[in-house]
Every structure is written in C-alpha cells, then in structure tokens.
Image 1 (tube, rainbow, N blue to C red):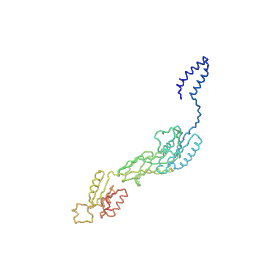
Image 2 (cartoon, rainbow, N blue to C red):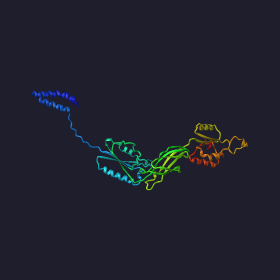
Image 3 (cartoon, rainbow, N blue to C red):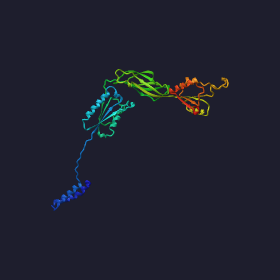
Image 4 (cartoon, rainbow, N blue to C red):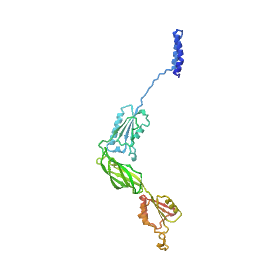
Length: 376
C-alpha cells in the first residue's frame, strides 16, 4: 500500500496542472482531471468491510463448600437449595457462563478437615482472561482455611451465602502451639485455645490426657490462648489429648477434642551391652558406643557360665555374679537399647526373663542381637 504522504506528493503537482488547464479552458482538461481522479481512487484502494461480532459471555463461578462442617444439621439441605436457586436465576441471563465448583469433596477424611474455597475459586478462573470474569458466589458455613490475610487478589464482585443460623452453638478446642518433639521426663510447653460461639466469654474445664491416661484438669478462659505443661512419659510416639464437655444443643462434639502427636526423645541414650563371650569385636562395640558423649553404656561380659566351677573361693574371684534380676527386672525400663553380642542361652538368663525382654520391646524398647548363623 502507498503511504498517504507519498501519494499526496505525487498527485499534488498533477492536480495543480489539471486545475490550471481548467482555469485557462484548455482542450482536454476535463478528461485529464477525470483520469487523475480515477488514478487517485485506484491508488487509495477503497474497501468496504462488513463485520459480524458476537459478544463473549462473562464467567460467574459458584463455589460450593462440601467439607465435613457442612454435614452438620440442615447445612447440606440449605446448600443444595441455595445452589439450585442460583442456577435457576443465573440461567435467565444469557450473558453469563455459570461454572459450579465444589471444594472439600474428597473422600479422604484428612482432606475434608480443611475448607479451601479460594483455591477452588482460582481453579475455576484458571483459563479465563481477566476481562471475562464476571464475579463469584460462595455457598459456605463461613469456615474457610485458605482465606487471604489481606484484600483478596480478585478484581470482581465476590458474594457469600452463609448456611446455618445465628442461634447455633458450637464450642471447639485446638492446639495453638504443639512441638513435634519433647525430652522424656522433662516438661514440654504447649499452647491451646477454647473457641466459643458469638464471642462467648467465661471459663471451662479442660481434661488433659497423655497416652490415654488423664493427667490433669486445667481451667481455661474461653477465647484466650492458654499455656500448658505436659511431661512426656516415654520415648517414641506419645499422644496428648485435650477434651471439653459439650454444652446442651451443641451442633457437634467432634471438635471438643484436640490431639497432638509428640515424639519423645531421651537426652542421653542408655545402652545395656551383654557380651556372651570375649572376642576381638567386643572392643569395637565399646569404642563405638563410648565415642558419643550422649550414650550411657552399661557393659557386662559373661566370662564363665554358672555350671562351670573350678573350686576357687568366691572372695578370691575378681569377677562378680551377673546381676540378672537387677538388669532385666528392676532396671530394664531405664535402658533405651539392649544389645546381645554373641550371646547364647547357657542358663545365665532364666526363661522367664525373656518374657520381660519381650514386654520391654512391646512397650517401645529397642533390642539388637549381634550374632551369626552359628548362634542360631
């Protein structure tokens, strides 16, 4: 295509000559002017456009809360009725493309404990340009766990239809701060909160249990973060449970309990090493275990079985009798690990003591048997 400045530069002198010819009434001036205008029209290339446009629909998202809290009372029925009403009314507007997204509908119980409506809202508009976003409507009970801290990054109208009613009562308790690990036998600092309905005030008794046994009853102020000290009784996994009594006509008592899983660890590892017979690797065991300052080692080597007697008076022996009862009955709970190194049953330990060792392992103790096929 010829640019406008270039076209004007070419046609201006020709147009001027044609006008001068008309002014002086020269023969053929009219035809020259007509030809010049035809040439200009051809160079301008006029085009007639006939466009057909169709307006794109605005997308409206309806986010439906299907979490566990929506199963309480009449909330499921209210949700279904509200959804049906919205679909009917929004269907009257041809300029809207309605998308229904359900959040918290997973069959896994642990995934239904949290309501992530804003994540579902984002997925509904993932393939929609910002200019086509018309708005969103949420049908929920108001418990949303992924709500943004500030103003939502959503530049469109956002509405919420709240299920339930303002007369519902529901107390719940939760841990505010629960460490994952704690030293055995040492107080562990924790924090919890009892939450009431409609800014409820007052105080309430909280039952504290550790591994299924109630250890105390705390007095808590509703709505405030309360400190709690719990002593971890043993190594391994420990269950700390808080519980409050349900009030009359409460929606559910499921959230009247809170559970924290805490792994108990020992400040020092107490190890009992029993060597069945002297060998070169015995020194390796001692060096390995004594190299760590956090390991408390108790080591016994069985140098002579009970049935072996050589007539030496007891007061002249430099050996002591193997303290089986003291180690495997009275103090077995004090050890975190028992190692049998090349030990074989030679009437040193009565059969009954193996039951004590089995009970020790069942309660979380560790047992290591270092032996080869010759001791099987």
